[in-house]
Amino acid sequence: MDARRNSHWLSEAIAPDEENSPSLHGDISADVCIVGGGFTGLWTALALKQQEPTLDVVILEKDVCGAGASGRNAGYVLSWWAKFASLEKICGGEEAVRLAVASAEAVNAIGDFCRQEGIDAHYRRDGWLWAATSDQQVGSWNGTVEAAERYQQHPFERWSPEEVVARSGTTRYQAGIFEPGAASVQPAALARGLRRSALARGVRIFENTPLTKLKGAAKPEVITPKGRVKAAKLVLAMNAWGIRFAAIRRAIVVVSCDMIMTEAMPERIKEIGWPGDLLITDSRMLINAQCTTRDGRIGFCKGGMNGRLPYGSHVGTKLDGPSPLREDVISWLAWTYPKLGRVRPASSWMGPIDRSKDGLPHFGALEGRPNVFHAVGYSGNGVGPSYLGGKILASLALEKQDEWSGCSLVRPLGRDFPPEPIRYFGGKLVRSAIARTDAAADKGKSPGPLTRYLAGFAPAGLSPFKGQKT
Image (cartoon, rainbow, N blue to C red; front, side, top):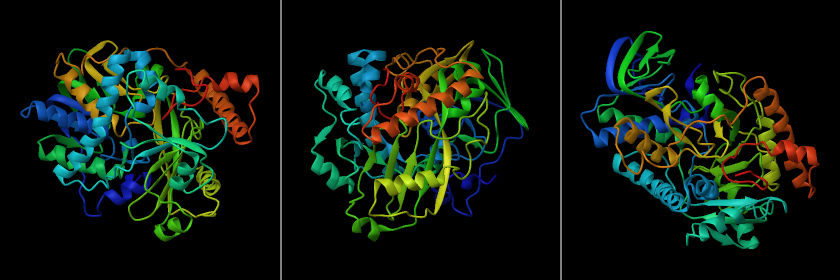
């Protein structure tokens, strides 16, 4: 299948005459082999080459760089401040502040890198509104804000209801807080730009080269359909596709994100009173997220166990192509902006999200394989944090003892989710309970005790929701 079908972003980012990197034919060796040509893999390669320019780094990508989750998301470049309560629990206060501050600095660093490298990723630092569309959602952010304030940190601005309505362009958003440091990008354009930067630094990239088998522990070896790579160190930067490995599968659950993109309509956006200059999400469990593009399109995303759940150990192509929930997502856009009416989108697509139990990623060596490192569990917030993920993985691969290899997110993969078939059928029950919980909140009601109990098993997402177990 043509990778461009996987999102409007990727179709826009790949020029018709742009050539792919070759696929791997034959046996090669490398100092570090990275499996996955998305944000995490590319930032890791760039971090490695920055620290050790002569290092032989190879990237294997099963499709083309940016065709996975990195080219299908809503383009939110966020920090970890929204997840500060979870960071504090895992890392302790001082380390949580360090990582949250570093993640906010990463947002700026990505913009700086784009300017230095001439990457036109549509980078805009317009901020993020974390909002509520029902009384039950109001205050979902209070625990996070209060936790940060205990350490004299104030990353959010509290907005009045009037300012929320004025800046969002709709009375559906009735309360919220604002993180001014957040940015947005055209994600596939960023991924393709990082690819060009990596190639310019001597990173060898092989596209259309999937991993078929992993051999060895101390001396890892990647088997592909027409070749193999022997490497001193191996990095698995596979996002949701990492569930093929049992240790990773125990620690994450893969859910779908479904998105639509309208035609360019800048004047229509102005007519309904929406400035369209910031990122917005609500606080429901099945989150609604929206953005605008620089040519005046609206991107609207529905995430969080809303659509398909893959069964077993392979994502495969189950979450590729146009969204089967296209009409539902259109309806949510119309609900959010009644003045806009029901807009027919130019395109729709879906993609996988690798959600961890606490909403934060896991880094470290794969169980029983000391020279195979992984990054997994970004939970819908990977565009910005993957920059730090690259630093962490580079330090692990180079065997450095520093603040990145020693950070508290370098942690063992636990048994956080059940095996199949409990995972699949239990996931359907939880998803149904989450939907009922959100529907009840929209009507100003509370769900029943069984629904609340089942919804409580939902893993953390982009931002905390009321009742989330941190």
